[in-house]
Length: 113
Length: 114
Picture (cartoon, rainbow over the protein chains, first blue to last red):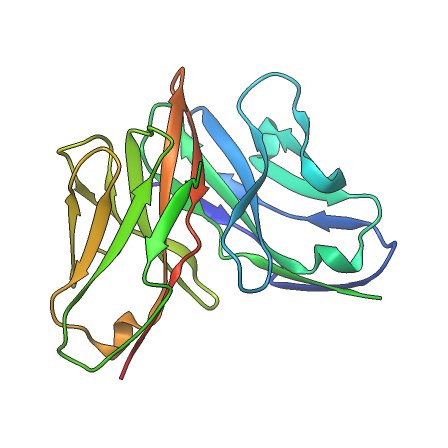
């Protein structure tokens, strides 16, 4: 079975600081990779996704993620966070052609103005 | 285009009561899912439906039943609610493009079982 690990459970940053959230997955085959964001009291929204091609993918709101196949990682980055980025971030994996998505336990990000 | 909608938004039940959570999508997606979200545990898949007329168990199906009523609707039923089922429930649907799927989520249902 696939699994997803997010090592940072809680992250607190000041505005303008750089962000990197770790995500590692365990699956030997080809996968689709996703980052979702959940703002307080809201539902999950797709931030970005990787299917194939350039391993550096750009998403909404200045976020980007890099797929490193050899490390089974898909870390999320943002050069300069804003207070409005305060949210919970979930990494997810889906095997090519598979129906199930596997989510990490989430990272709670708090940005201090 | 409303995307994925869920009803109700909030519900309080007593132990042993039953209820059905409704989910509908207007994106013509084949696959639909029910998750529960609990603090520190992320999202866990309860059931999913790869297509109309099919359903499969996910990671935590015990205590739940589902019905894929048609392509648009996928309901989740708690026959006899237990306090352990207090959670936030999310429905999702996914579009399939060349075997690549992306999930889209509904707003969630907050359920409290006393």
